[in-house]
Length: 370
Ligand code: OSB
Ligand code: MG
Image (spheres, rainbow, N blue to C red):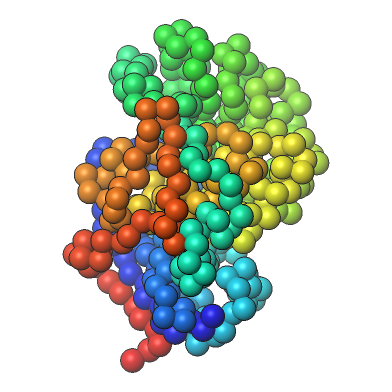
């Protein structure tokens, strides 16, 4: 596969409503899209970095810089035997997983199209529909949260995840659990607590949560092992896990019992596939996390979620939950039983609305350089 052209663009999209986490609130998304032309096929990828470095150290602007200065120049005109060779080609560039992932995933899309198969099949996925859940931002009070949970359950979602932070945690969880004693429920703290909060977090044990996601520091696996020893609720790691070696370390340290895999955080499909396999062999369930993606990132998440390690519902929900109009067609829809049907057409299986992308574009870089 010869990499003949690369286009990097920034598009602006406004979320239907603000999304609040323990590290801040986002509504106006600055999303980077990558289009790669390989042997004449056009593949698309999305960089899932946020606008600010509150989730991880990358941002829209650091990814723009890394792709423009290092990743695209190292890739253009190269010939790859397979998309899975991309990480080796980028091994001289440390970190910047989300920047790399946006580019690598575009190559996977192009490669699946060249083979005439869906990206899901190309990755080795087997599920024809994937179970899905939702992630609910922090709310003003538990009454409005319960109302939101009711809507999502009505739409069929199989698992509800509540964002929490100190001062907006146990009381909110207790209220939702009281209203819905039997739903699959979890919480996500995005690193808002410290080990000293162990006693406080232990109060969550009585609510029968599926998991508590990333309670402690974004870059500290070891301290999570100390917390996991003190609470019954399963810890799920998100922010801490950037590659399979991190995942194996966390499992062996007993720092978590579940892992969230995000394509961007782990640098793309090649590493995500390796990670889910390593977790499956160790009986650690994984699920697909979300980063408020546009349809392109969402389509990649759906394809990845068809791999056998993904045994829990992910944060992959309908386009309409986020956007008044998505940039792909058809938009991502969720069935009444809380699943997404996996497309069977070649590549990511959704078509990119080029006109709409063009309208939303605020800047662009192209290779080969003119
Ligand atoms: O921690 O999973 C997270 C959104 C932005 C940053 C981090 C996270 C999230 C979500 C939303 O939980 C997932 C989604 O619906 O895309
Ligand atoms: Mg998370």
